Image (cartoon, rainbow, N blue to C red; front, side):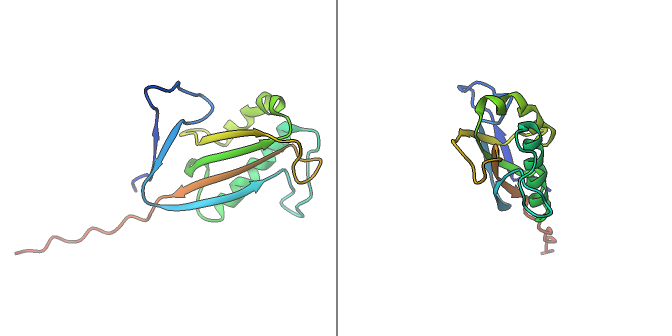
Length: 144
């Protein structure tokens, strides 16, 4: 099945190890994942207060659940937007993110905010993904 996303590295932009600069998408189904926070999958209560690393892990686990619910995974993600209450601390633990986004990194934005929806939450990530369109069966050549 052909991949609908293509990573593009413009010659006149520096290569980034944390994200892709440009991704094109042709065909497929777009998936938009709402901002996920470090909330329990059981009762939506905030978990891991004060621990940015654990919160990033929980957020990624929650994104994974959302992606799997529509037949997608982290390799299908083309864009993330991360909101954090502490940009410096997020950079210290950003390696946690690479346990989930391992190849063909999505484009990405990081935004520092004063507060998220609950005072114990330190990071929120929203994602956009594209699921490859099903392959069309080839038509048989007609004899003339």
